[in-house]
Length: 379
Image (cartoon, rainbow, N blue to C red; front, side, top):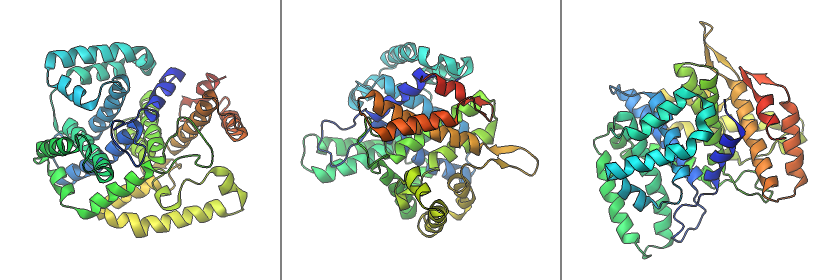
């Protein structure tokens, strides 16, 4: 099961700075990069799914994203250029990954032998099937998205010309992917990725000083990963796991239209929360849905509206564990308050939020997950 060391470890990505040798007009963190990457992977995956591409598998895409996230946390001190240089040497890359696994195994071992075995297999299997190439392409696109910001701020900066050339060369590696071709020729899908990327710049608890800061986008990835891992814990199958992951990944997407409104504000005026939900739904229809193919609307509606309601098919099969995702969302809010307090920020708002969430989940088991036990580890 998920335990305290794992929860604290994944939050390290919120403090990992990217492009810290370049002029940056905004803060760029590893957590946000990984989150944006998985949204891009969703876009590429939906395209491959629509094309009926043989070998495409959502579970492989999701797990590749989680495994690369964990790998990146461990190799945080390696600059990307050096990391990619090591990858070119199979022997050295294998040695690096063995070290990665040894470092993180004590933290992930409570997740179960199957997960650890899959992670180790992923690290040592360097074959690039379709699903791994989708993740690689998404990683590249997210990097390019960041570089475009860097380049605008300092077009004649040190190594900018060299980086630009390297990115153009790497882009050629993905030209044979139908999904990448479709994305590069679709202004609307690029707008969709851009608007999702704007959630990098919306900081949670923005009215309070906090360390580490987390953006709405980074928060969504953490909810997605934990929702998926909880799904594995309760032995959920196939599409249910996929739906739980992507509901977590997109559950706060409407906030790009309304900003991150904290619960006390929503509860301050009777009916305000319902009004916000209604506005978000209307604006999603008017501004977001038009950017994606119509065939994707049903899925996006499921991920972003009534996201905390359980969904059950006509056959009685659970399609999504909304209450589990809500509890995971609250767990991440608790961790944000907990880490702020641990980092010396004495705020009554954080103290009250931490205690309020903890009290609500005391002794609670939701969808088969003992949240009371998880929260008790933070006593």
